[in-house]
Amino acid sequence: MEKIAIVVDSSSGLTKKQAEEKGWFFIPLHIEINDKLYDDGINISNETLFNVFNADSKMAKTSSTKLGEVVELVEKLNRDYDKILVYPISKYLSGQYQSIKILEADYPKLRVVESKNIAAPTVLDLIAFEQNIKNGMSFEEAYNQFGINNNSISLMPKYNDFLVKGGRLSPAAATLARLLKIVPIISFSDGQLLKEGKGRVFSKTVFNVIEDKVKNYNENCELILLHSKNEEINEYIEFAKNKIKGNIFVGSIPSVVAIHTGPEAVVVILYPKKLNNEIVGLTKI
Image 1 (tube, one colour):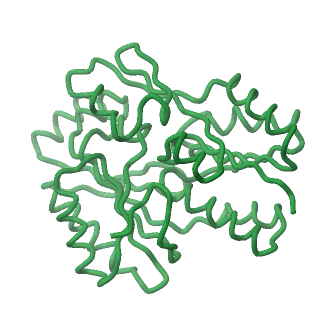
Image 2 (cartoon, helix red, strand yellow):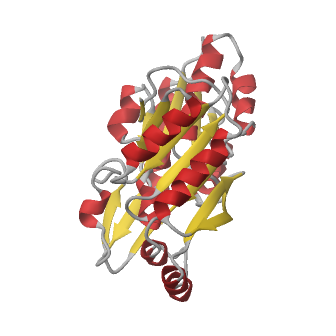
Image 3 (cartoon, rainbow, N blue to C red):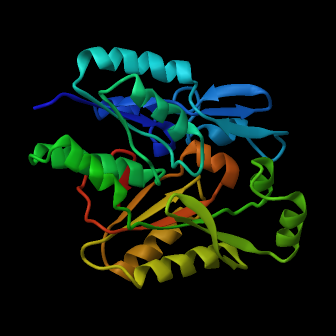
């Protein structure tokens, strides 16, 4: 069997430690807060982000992994593995895919997934890839499965001020939304963040989105809730469990997303496959 190295970036929601526990390799996206640069998943994570980033922070931005870091890792893996698979952040959210893709010309063993995913679905895609390889599928066949994406993902930021800090919303629009008590519902569809709708009360909006996802839930699906330290997450979990009469998978929003959506944001995902009990980065409840 071919030796395959799997590389994820921090948009997966994993830390370097978590990725390495899976036997994967890790490259950090970068987060800059008030002129201090952090390596996401290494010296900052979804657990610690809001200890250093808050409403008083003057600026925040994210950036791709330094290309030199990627080249150094690929050089090392090129000596020890038959294939190198890199699964980066969605190509519509960052230049990460494009910058790493050009390395394929110099490293024939390297394949970069044309990603349209982020967060937990990235991890789930890679777990499925590994299982396909174990089941005898060729590398190319398993690689081509990454193009199949039927997730239904909705994101709800609780505080619009953080969308302004991250450059995702104008100050005028944020002020209007605050005055009208509007909660934006953002769909992550085909790798892009798109306007899905709006609500008026945050908790009610989350309940309504869960209710909407449940309409398409069946025995072959899973419901996943991601959040940024939301204080009411247990209420949303119980509501969802009562609706589907089953288990919920719960995890954290990746730091590179949470820095734009702010604390207490919630993501609801209807994932079109059943999951194993142990999924890195997710807890089955």
